[in-house]
View 1 (cartoon, rainbow, N blue to C red):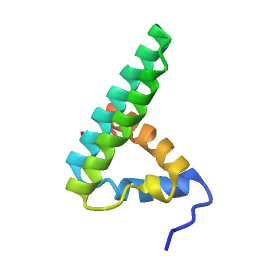
View 2 (cartoon, one colour; view 1 turned 180 degrees about the vertical axis):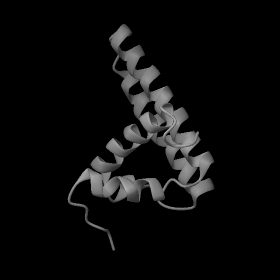
View 3 (cartoon, helix red, strand yellow; view 1 turned 60 degrees about the horizontal axis):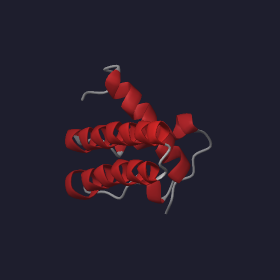
Length: 101
């Protein structure tokens, strides 16, 4: 049964618990970096195909982390918007050292 969250602040601890495996978090980080790079390429070249590459890379690395290392289903399937936001907050938290990389 899917858990309901009233706010993103309520959701984020759950999101972090679903990312306890360090390799999974690292794969999320790599996928997010690639997505940012592809997004920049789309902006520079005005070629929308780079946006598809950004979407695919971001999710592919994250899902590999979940299925092969975390052994759970990505939160994206149940909480797509909060999960998308959680990925970027976790990315920032990893960059700033709040969460171990």
